[in-house]
Image 1 (cartoon, helix red, strand yellow):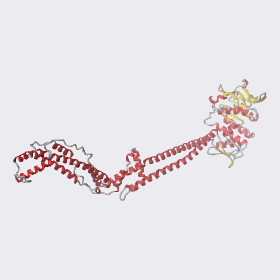
Image 2 (spheres, rainbow, N blue to C red; image 1 turned 180 degrees about the vertical axis):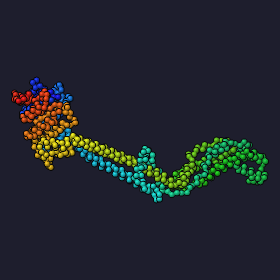
Image 3 (tube, rainbow, N blue to C red; image 1 turned 90 degrees about the vertical axis):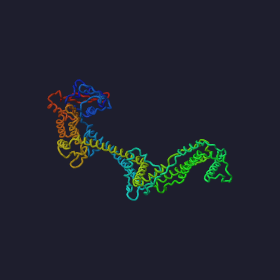
Image 4 (cartoon, one colour; image 1 turned 60 degrees about the vertical axis):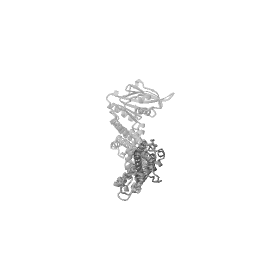
Length: 617
C-alpha cells in the first residue's frame, strides 16, 4: 500500500510539503477533503503519475510504498502495485477523447484507444500496401504479357519454318510447345550445345525440303598401293645383269633396244644376212651380240615390262573412274559429296603423278640393266582416304532413303532446338523478371494479410475489452433514474444515443455519470487485481444533483469496498460526510480509516498547501 507522500517540492501549489508524524500513515480507506484551489486536483494527478509511471516536469516528490521510499525520478525502475485513478485526466484519455465539441461516437477505454491508434497506423500501412499491390499487379500483368507475347512470337516463327503439308506436328506448334522445349533445355543447363551455324541450318533445311531418292551404289575401287609399286620399282632399280656387254650398246639404250629387236627378227627368219643392209653377218659379231643379249638380260627386261604394264594399267583405271552423279544424292549431302570428289580427284592426280615417275624410272632402267642405282624419292603419302569419305556420304544417303521421314523429323527437331536455344536467354530473362515481380507481389500480399490479421486481432481485442452495452445501460438507467440516455455498441466503442438519435448535447452531469460508471467497470478488468489494487477517485459527483450524488455514492460503495486500498478526494462537504459515515459504520476497525483535509495558506513564497488530519466535527 501507499503509506505517505514523504515530500512534495515546488510542484504547483505544494511548495515545500513534508509528511509530519501527526499525520500517521495512509490506511486502507482514505478520505481527502479539500476546497477549491487547495491542491486536491494536483494531488489526484500525482496519484495518476504513479499509475502511469510518468515523469513530472515541475518539481519532484517522494512517496513511501510498502516501506520503500520512491522518488518521482525513479518511477520507471521501481516495482509498483496496480493503481487505478478516476479524475479529469482519466475522463479525457478514456471516455471523451475527441477535441472540440462532443462527437456522436465515443471510444471507451484507455487500452482501446491505444489499440485503435495502433489499428489506424496499421490501416494507413494497409492502404499504402494496397496501393503498392495495385502497382505490383500491374507490373506482373505487364511482364506476363511480355513473356506470353515473346513465347507466342517464338512459337510462330518455329511453326512458320518447320510446318509442311501432310502430317507434321509442327503444323500446330504454339507458345506452349516453345515453353516446354525451353524449359527442357534450361533444365539440362547445356542449351548452348544445341546452337547451329548457318551452314548446318542450311543443310537441315535442305533435308526437310527434300524428297526421298533411290539408293546409290558405293564406290568399289581402291587407290593403287603406291607403297607396293614403289617397293617393286626400287627392287628392280637395284638389280643388274651380269654379261659380256658391248660397250656402245650398254651406253645407248635406244640402240640396244633396236639391235635386240633386230636379233629377234633374224632368229625368226633364220637369216645370216643383215635384214637392213643385206650384207652377211659376221659370226663373231653374232656371238658377241648373243653374249650381250643373253637369257638373264632377256628375263630382266620382261620383268621390267610386266611391272611397267601393271603400273600403266593402274593409271588407265584411275583415268576411267566412274562416280555417282551428285544429283542422285539427297540435296543436303551434295556439297559434302562435291568436296569429297574434289579431294578424290586431287588424290588421283597425285597418285598418277607418282606412278608416271615410277614408269619413267623403269623405262630408264631398261637401258641401264647392267647398272645398279637408287631410285629417286617420291616424297608422297596420301593425305586421307577420300573414297571412304565418299562411301560414308553414300551410306548416309542410303540410310536416309531407307528411313527418310525419321531423318526429316530429326532435322526438324534439331532446328527447333536451335531456334529455342537462340531465344532462351531472352526467355529466361523475362521469366526471371516475372518471377521477381510475382515474388514482390507475393511479399506485398503476405504483408497485407499480416496487416489485416493484426488489425482484426486488435479490433477483436478492442471489442473484447469493451464492457457490454447492456450492462452499462442498466447502470446508467439506475444512476440517472431514466432510460432516455443509452449506449449503443459499435465496432470499437459506443455511440451515445438519446432515445433514437445520436446525443450531441450531453450535460456535465451526464458526462460525469458515463465516465464514472465506466471507471467502476474497469475495476473488473482481468489485468486489475483487486486484492492488490489501489483505487483513487477524485470528485465523482462534480455536476451531479443531490439525487445523482446519492446514486454515485451507492455505486461507489458497491464497487470498491474490496480493493486493497482506497483514496477518495472531494471538495463536496455533503459527499465528504457521506463517505465518513460509510467509513465509520461499515469499517469495524478504525485503524483502517484515515481522513485528511487540504489546507492552503499564503506565505512569502506564495500559496502553499499541506495535508492535516480532518477534524471529525
